[in-house]
Length: 113
Length: 116
Image 1: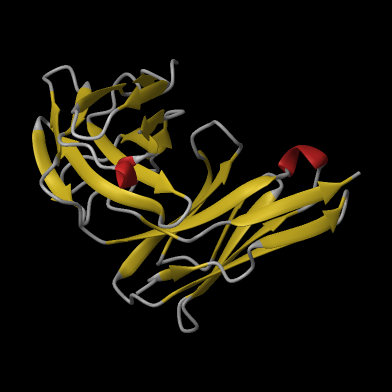
Image 2: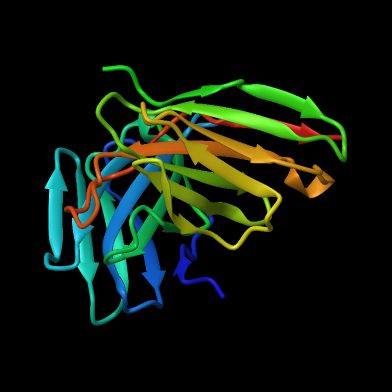
């Protein structure tokens, strides 16, 4: 069963607008969540993370929101830039599980100039 | 600071052979993890090492194994290769210590393994 799901395989946004990427999870033991960006032929690049004790974390143009009751997190990118075009993965891990991350299937973001 | 380094970048092997992949973590990182990425299954956790000890293992057959050396460098080995083992193998390191605070994984660019 997929414990972390990204239901939108792709998303297209105009440059300068907001990109919102969504992720749902089912395992209530998850308490640390991360977002990664991936370009072809490269490894995933860490973007931002959030612990379950928070509901929001910001880093520059990137903000992650966590809704524990809905088991949902989202990544907001404002403003979107063409260089943001990549595949975005959300990942989660339970407490005391080391680095055993469970990844979603990814969302391909295309930012049009 | 140098990132996570994986060698080789590309590898072609024949069914039944074995392969060893190498990973050098970011300096100071003591936790090293391995992940497999395939089009069908996505990114899946293989195993994690900390201080030369395997601390977590994913749901993969025993043909997949790994180890970590005293300098935190790690290797993974796949024996009796099957066609389905063709994938991008990613190594990642972090500052996470035993019982420590959560810290993000930083990935290398991977080794692309093709089994023919």
